Image (tube, rainbow, N blue to C red; front, side, top):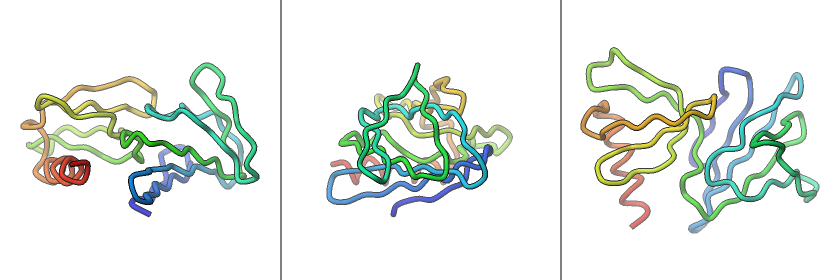
Length: 135
């Protein structure tokens, strides 16, 4: 397990890595909720092995965990990203990094592009570790 978080809506999100495959498992405890399918996810499976078909980019997540296997390393759990001043923060998933620009996907599905040099030192370290891991 590379990360585990509970988002603001109470959805549990665990990111798992085996060799080069990164997968995300999501579940809820109290109720079912529509959750946006993260960028890079091409397949959804419940714990029984049944394929789940998302509707308009959303899936229903409840007590039965949903597995999102992906060869794409863009699938990440939601985390809080901060700017270098500490005055700005956004809860988002990492989507991509190219040409010095980090693309984040907020929980509402909107993407935010942030120059790497504007991020906090902790977030820069996270990006550097991620990039070196992919090399």
